[in-house]
Image 1 (cartoon, rainbow, N blue to C red):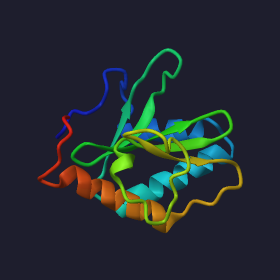
Image 2: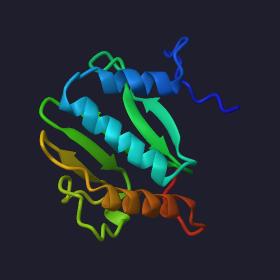
Image 3: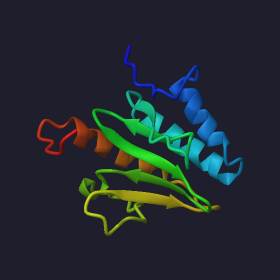
Image 4: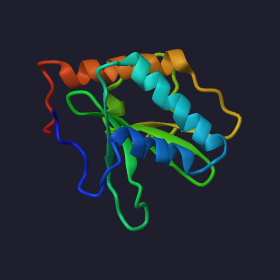
Length: 143
């Protein structure tokens, strides 16, 4: 089995850590993050969940979804939830759901605010395209 748990996880599984991150805001952001997670896992049943970047200002860390490399990560901000694709600039985004970090040379993100509806079909397409990018034999970026 893969020992991907960070050294601060003690007895909590990665799934439980992400459950705790989702529950922390206790408002619409929790629901949005839960919905994003469900779409990601349904789009790619082989996706690996991780928690990374634990630090004093964010001791719980950041939920990350990987498949032969990071696909996306989610930040819960004060007034929004941001799902960032680290290689988003390389994705076609046919449904045009990226709405933030559009000027980045590498990443693209989907910013959700209270009342926004998640474009599940568009997100599913991005996840599948990101998986294809990560698993393609011609990928160029380092690990």
